[in-house]
Length: 265
Image 1 (cartoon, rainbow, N blue to C red):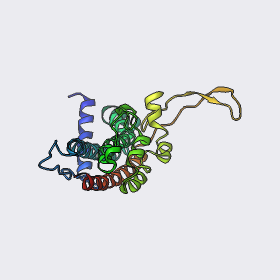
Image 2 (tube, one colour; image 1 turned 90 degrees about the horizontal axis):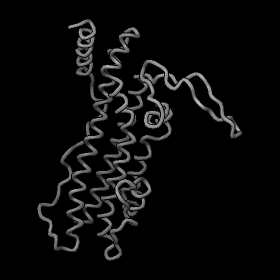
Image 3 (cartoon, helix red, strand yellow; image 1 turned 30 degrees about the horizontal axis):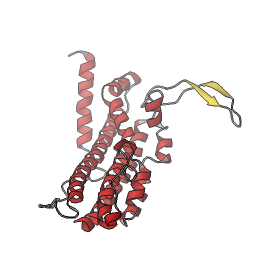
C-alpha cells in the first residue's frame, strides 16, 4: 500500500476504536410497535379507511424510525471522527475530511429538515384517514382536503391533525426541530448547500465574494471575506440536540397513532 492508504487505514482503525468506546447518547427509536388488525372487512363502513390507515401507519412508523436512528448513528460517527482528527496537522485532517467526513456531515446536517417534512407527510395522510371515523358523511376525499403528496407541508398536517388531542404535544415537539437556533448554529447550511455553494466542514472558507444589501436602502455591494468552516465538535453538539428533539417527536407521534387507532378500529 502507498503512504496515503496506510495513513487512511490506520485512522479508520482508530475511528472504529473510538466509535466502539462511545456510549449511545440517546436510545434508538423502536420498531414493530404498530400492530395492524389481523382482519379488516373491506365491506364494512370504515373498511377502506382501516386498510389505508394500517398500511400508512406501518410504513410511517418504520420509515421515521429508520431516519431518526440513521441520524443518531451518523452523529456518533461524526463524534468519533472528531476524536480521530484531534491533533492532526492540516494536510492530514484534509485527507480524513475528504475521504470520510464531508459527505457524512452534509447528510447529517440536512437530515432534521428532511425528517420534519416526513413527519408532516405522515401526519397529514394518517389524520385524513382517521378523520373519516369522526366526520362520517361530512368527510371528503379530494385535493382540497388533502392535496397531492408534493404539496403536503406543515399547514396541511396542522389542519387535518388539529382535532386530535395528541396533536398539541406533537406540534410542540416538532417546533423544536430545524428551527432558527439550529439554522444559525450551522450557518444556514441547508440553504447554502442547496441553493448556493457547499459550506466547508472543519477546514477551508466558502463563498469569499458575497453580494450584500445596504442597510435601509435598495442598494447592494459586493463584500470580500467568506464564511469560515463549521467545526466538527459544534456540528456534533447541534445534531445531538436535533436527535433528542426528533426522538420526542416520535414519542408524540406514537401517541397520535394510538389515539387515532382507538377511534378508527
